Length: 124
Image 1 (cartoon, one colour):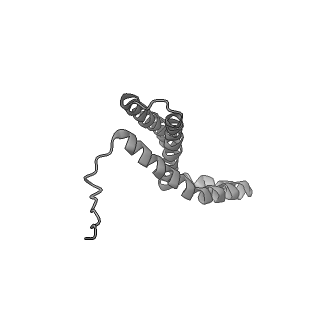
Image 2 (image 1 turned 135 degrees about the vertical axis):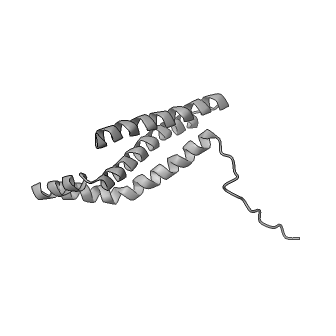
């Protein structure tokens, strides 16, 4: 008798806070990877001359590019803080459930603080 595949309902799977931080770490890494060509192009245009710099400055005066920049700032902050947490876990620091939960909260709070500071700077 063949064993049937199990249907996993991804909406019903419970992830602890550390699992969410890990998933967001992967999402932020993917966002940063996808943004590399755009960032290189923007740097190239802005360094091409005064007109290119003005073009990029005018582009980032609009709200949508600022929101995209804020998303990338979140991704960079979260990927950095979560990466440090993962490095600590790799050397067996903070493996207890209590400490893992605390470091997950710390990563989310630090990321939120950096993102809020960047949003205040971008939109104030």
